Image 1 (spheres, helix red, strand yellow):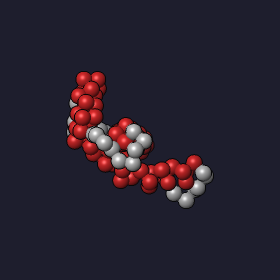
Image 2 (spheres, helix red, strand yellow):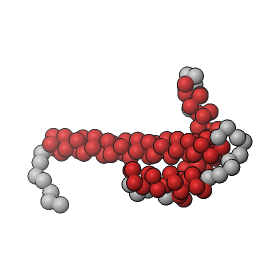
Image 3 (tube, rainbow, N blue to C red):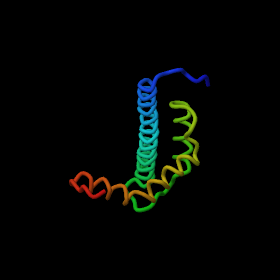
Length: 113
């Protein structure tokens, strides 16, 4: 990279612009990660609810996940294999209580978290 000949004022200006871009990139990364977490949590929730159909335990699942995987591959493209869908279901099952509790705290005005 070629060094630019600039005065001190321009260097400060250039540095400030670069910092804004770097901050934006970090924000986009965090936002994307959060969006993916919410997406996979919701996919997992929907799978669990569909599998269980109001029952305490699922009666089927493999056929549902295989069918959903095939449908999503055609509709939205790669990235939704049966194992990915199983992981989404497991993500929901593991974190359901914690995420709901955190959301309830936020919606009730709890400023501590």
